[in-house]
Length: 390
Ligand code: NZQ
Ligand code: ZN
Image 1: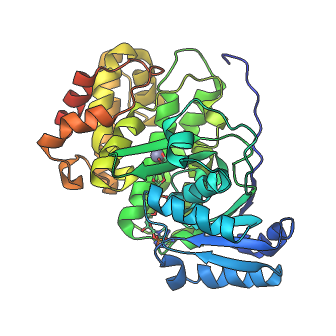
Image 2: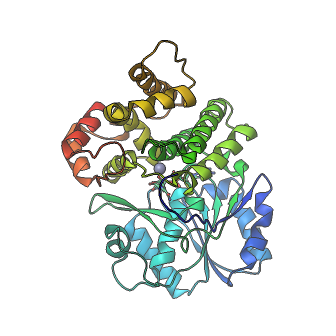
Image 3: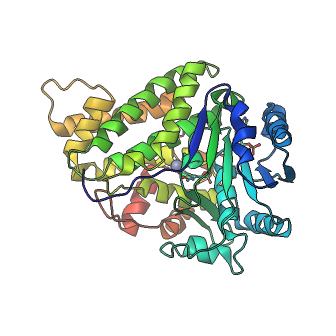
């Protein structure tokens, strides 16, 4: 393992088809006033709202509801939440939904008691750590598997006026105190959202896996997770109510991005940086922005890490090696990824997401360029990858 690191994850998980039975007890450790935040209303149709309300009542909480958190939550919505949290002096924020709602809850958590411009302070300034700001603790009930937000410090906020979508990774103090993971809660997801979450999970693992060339336990863990995601995805797209598959997908998505498999790794994250810029321009579904560009991106960077891409083909996709060069194997691994994207029904290109050729320069300008994967891209290379993805 490379580097020196501290590993701690404070999020307590309650997993399984009876996980919600733990919610009242989990809430009892926190204050009386709970800000209950959720999205556009799916939880009112699938029974999750009623389960949560019953637990809040059983725990004797005073509830302030904050509905209407949109996919890819915006700065304006954040400012509304900050005001409500502050005016009501809430003790706890309970996020019930997918990554958007949980990210939103964390954003309100850190910024409610901050007096200035939260977007500038917490998202634009990436390297400015928290300085003792008052933080409102967060808990989560997950209804969509994919982002890993239920067990990490990430919070992605979109500023449409600035054409920017920025993810901030906060530390332990902002990670959810607990998360309730009931795979049955994900059964009501529209097929397209389920698939977007599956690809998002796979992408999180690949972003960490495709960096470095040392022999690292993190990579073996990543390979196991990828194999599980692929196997369960093929079942879930045919049988969305297959509990075994959906439970594996939920558990894998949590472990894909709760810091474990990134330990000792430099990590890439350029697919996400380009994907977020596409999202800022189009408001497209996060997982689909990633699937739309991944094949072109990996074909572009493959030449810098033939050995790693050959291993990906061999171990993750079980491609026979007989008589093949590493170059051939590496290329076949990416072919397998492309075929899988089509098989599960994720986006294979970005035109269907609303990207037009005249946007490519702007998307490239809105992309934050990182330098930890196999290559530091230039603006021109980003444009080429986007063009190859149209
Ligand atoms: O708004 P509601 O009614 O809840 O509907 C949502 C939304 O329309 C619906 N949905 C969720 N659970 C459902 C359901 N519909 C029926 N039944 C259910 N059980 O699905 C739609 C998408 O939900 P959303 O929360 O937006 O999706 P996701 O979980 O993919 O979250 C996307 C956001 O997370 C950020 C993305 O950038 C995006 O803003 N990310 C957060 C990360 C993190 N915190 O670490 C990392 C990721 O890479 C990602 O960037
Ligand atoms: Zn993601």
